[in-house]
Image 1: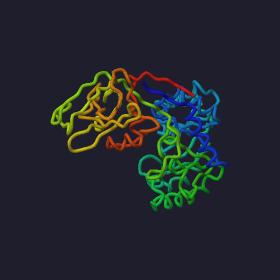
Image 2: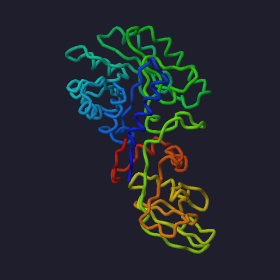
Image 3: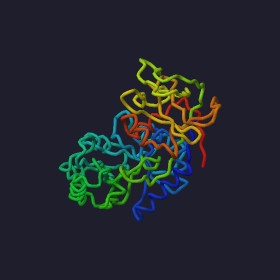
Length: 351
């Protein structure tokens, strides 16, 4: 079962909004609101006070518009010709990331607001700083000038200052546009590069925007799986596909009903050579034992005092085990943990 705390989501937004005031705090709800569901997340954020939303694709923007008729919605991934009718019909604002994007949007039947993404070092999307002057002369209603940090999660990285300086150098070429630099981690940089509008995403959903420091955000997701069966094995017995994990003592195992088909990374497996993921059972941390299967995972519950665990819940994500920790144990990042939350989960929204 996947429990999603919309109250915690709203509280995270309010905390970030207070941090950056008087700048406006938007919300990134791309990738189905980082896996928790656009149709639930966007209204909860709007109720908390958010009026500006960012999505990756026009189709996501349509979903936000359906539940928030008056919101301002930006589409981050540029402008594809096929998406033009959707953008116009649903009053979505493209984030122009190339001269081709700008030329296409300028041909719209009437002047419509848009954002301009300037690449200050990511080399992914965005126009070159040298092209901003030419774009400023085009018939475009650019209401937001933005860039994206490369390494804002590392407050000591000199790239942050370089990008801030590059962005500042071109700011005057579009004096009437609002500015936006900061993603989740950017909100915690000492330079306070908030501009007029910030764009938190990961932190809203409980991810730690300050790696290496205590997480200032509340957990939003709680993932639990039922214990289907328990068994006792002797020292030396092996567990799972290809017998990669060996018991070093008489061990009680529990098989839980979750696997990589549900979005639990296979790389969270535990072998004789590596420590894998963990689950909380009755307040006890229980390490994975063996490989994560498609629908099943085995955990070591030897230290759990309760004698009968069949039907009990094992918690893989929550207050005790956060998305960043599971990401680290699966050799990935918490972003991937969130966005891979499986469609098979029974979802419960609270708060």
